[in-house]
Length: 168
Image (tube, rainbow, N blue to C red; front, side, top):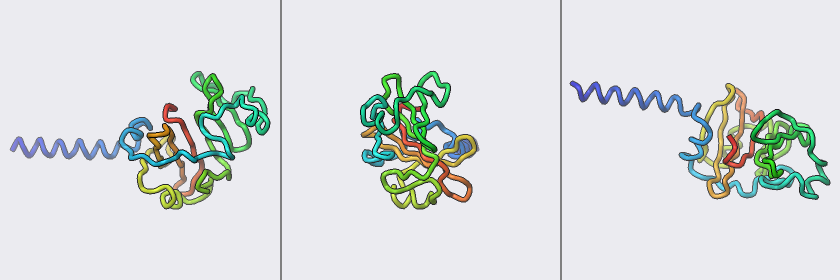
């Protein structure tokens, strides 16, 4: 009798855990998700860890002096319409947030179907929810990067985010 109660309790707890998984933090998903190679991901030829003080960056986007957000950990800059970056204090780019029609390396852009993402990037992704929005994400453990696609109820991408895995 006790054995059945214990087994039922364990099953209920496991069910609750699996229902909560989408709300776990990104760092949890990064630990348990199988890796995907994201080494070639870039935004208009810019890669994570490029520096905003480099001559090439300044030539295209100008010197970044106006912060887009008030954040104590990172410097956020809007470098063009629909493109926000986050940097560390040295100017290294740690995050891209894209909310416009600029494609990522495999040609995916805002407005496209999340099913196209899955077809091109594969099935080794995690699901989570943030601010009421569904997200799927891919993790590159070797290169310490992640790529998340935020999508609406019609399963169309509304933004994507390329991050250094240290970003929270």
